[in-house]
Amino acid sequence: MKDKVVVITGASSGIGRATALALAKLGARLGLAARNYPALMEVTDEAKRLGAQAVAVPTDVTQKDQVADLVSEVLATFGRIDALVNCAGVGVIRPIEQLTEEDIDRTYAVNTKGVMLVSQAVGMAMLKTGGGRIVTPVGTMGRYVMRGSAAYSASKWGAVGALKAMATEWQRNGISISLLYLGGVNSPFWDAIEMKVQRDKMLSVDDAAQAIVLALQAPANGVLNEMVLQPESHQFI
Ligand SMILES: NC(=O)c1ccc[n+]([C@@H]2O[C@H](COP(=O)([O-])OP(=O)(O)OC[C@H]3O[C@@H](n4cnc5c(N)ncnc54)[C@H](OP(=O)(O)O)[C@@H]3O)[C@@H](O)[C@H]2O)c1
Image (cartoon, rainbow, N blue to C red; front, top):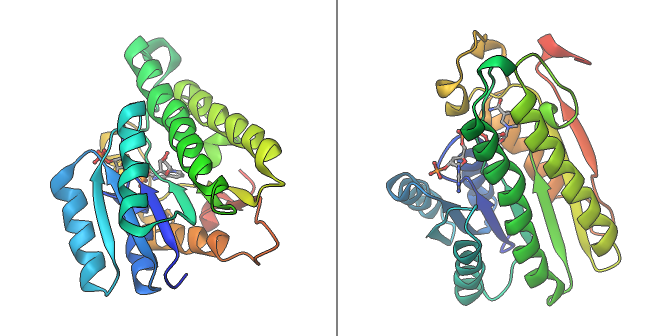
């Protein structure tokens, strides 16, 4: 990953933050995006302390103009983009009777539309430089469902559909797309979710980052299309 330019959305927290720091240790150059500027700056400063070049670009992935600014800022700083890691996401797990229209709109806006806007804009920049990799930790709810996951699963299945369609369009242009179906990851994601879960049995954010780095490091002429990584307690669920 040395000197590879990697854009990470959702870099201010959880899996995105851990991925940024793992890639910083490998010498990647980082374009870090999220809305919470102080948290984003903290990660950016930490990546720099680890020896990486990094730029923080405050971005709401649901806003097309802000996504365009993210791509412009990273290109202006590093001249190219080699990889994108789509970590921006929101979680809602709530019985269908209690699901609000706002829950549906928000999960769709960030998890589906946001992933599409960022992948589209970064992918179009990659096309000009011979390609790159797009890695998205969609989560197992992009593949399975569970009680209360209607809005969340719909948003993630939507992202999966969009990314698979992009792969069919770009697969002969050097752009590879990886979908990582991660099971529960012990991150701040769960703080706002009203469901009893055993966080100590989950994957760690560093486990998730390791899986993302593995996908980024696939052989140059190959692609890690899909991976399911579950906590030991949830095998084949
Ligand atoms: N935790 C799990 O069990 C798990 C498992 C599988 C997959 N995933 C997926 O992995 C991704 C990362 O989750 P996580 O566990 O790291 O959660 P997290 O700690 O809550 O982080 C979510 C990140 O998304 C960013 N974000 C939210 N809305 C955004 C927006 N509109 N624009 C830009 N950034 C936005 C947040 O930053 P700001 O608030 O600063 O914008 C934050 O950095 C999500 O897509 C999640 O669905 C999570």
